[in-house]
Length: 318
Ligand code: SD4
Image 1: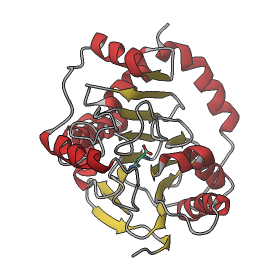
Image 2: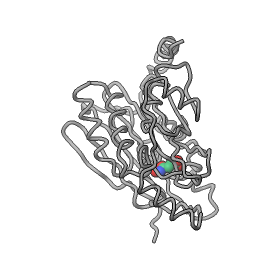
Image 3: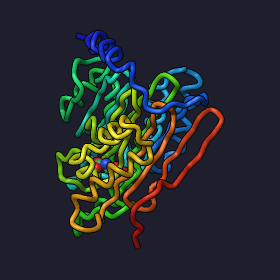
């Protein structure tokens, strides 16, 4: 059964049940906009351009994330991503729309656009997550091109790394740039996330980025959140879901991100030695972010405005 048909009745029931909720009131008309993690400015600009020509928030989001996946200079996402410790590039991604539909792929090799495959999982299948070989044969059936994702640069860095084989994610240069993107218009919020995960991870490792509620969560009646950083910590704290639930209680996007990070900090024995960054959007069109460590930026683009902001943070590091 096609997922689209499958979810129709459910989505309607959900909207009726939630229609009386109001999280923030706002009289200002907000333009459609995209926000994204790190310095992915070209991604949000690509997204808003696509939105302008297609009027589809979701198409803009996929196109914006594809830009990063296709770019070999970004070694945390898609083509040119740094490999795992066996030398294989393995990708994770997920997407969620305003109706609460979601699609995800994890541990995908040899297909550079996992966000598009995740989109197709959402739209074309009755499932939410496809993993590994199953996700790859689905991609093949959907007509995606199979190709080697390991660039010369990533291969060279891997050869250097393997000499010592030390797995030590370092704050902010622990091979970040995972693209997490949220899109907003007056009636819809959608989100997506795509990554090659942590460099030199163990073979088979899956991070937070393809896991709904961890790396990404969207509730169209409340808001959305997307995460980046050390996935193991985001996974075990369900950070994106938590941010949305905090916003449901009336907390602003920035304060919700800060509170969710406090929950991570509370479980650490002393100061965390890893980075996590969260960005969020509320139903009223407010955006906000917070990070454990200094150095996490996020970017915004609407048809008329672009900005990049450093997220507020708990700690500095040397
Ligand atoms: C992961 N959260 O796989 C991802 C990594 C990341 O910027 O965000 N890098 O754990």
